[in-house]
Image (tube, rainbow, N blue to C red):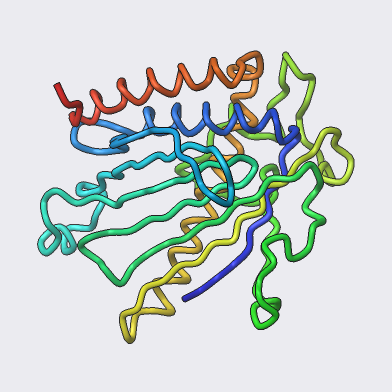
Length: 254
């Protein structure tokens, strides 16, 4: 198992990001989905946890068959998907990814959100033996992302928000921006296959890092679309987009 902590700062407050996160996830899922491919929402319901209190449980299936290389498609079932389960007790969330075809593979992500620039140490209270684990600070403005994901309209170095007056982001923005908040993510990747474990776990972390960068860049670049929404507004938007995305993927129950 390979565990890393990621810290991603945003020029937002924690309460603002609560709406922005939900909006961005829904919009992005809809954009990347197509017939037979993409994100299918299986359930989205309230959930009460004895420790964390009331929250939201969401289960999704990420259909990936055509995204696999040719050799993999020859051995993987035609209907191939990864299951995502997320428990949202904002400002604390848990997300798990599993795949029935690869029972020895899993991803576990704990997230905490705070109004600071990533200065909280050992926020997850990890055991002493894990205190030396890698902490990776992600910069949404100046860290490189894969070229295929780049869009000038989503570049924080170019984007300026009409509604908030925030942006473009300059060097040192994390220390100078007000407001600023941080997503702290403790990510554990496990792939227990001898001879492949280290290579696969490192590769998955690289993919996760890219996904986190792209997603947080979009949340800021789309801020004028969601900034005036209330939590109730974005929940309605979420329900509408779940139906529209399931129709797009082709997994809507009738």
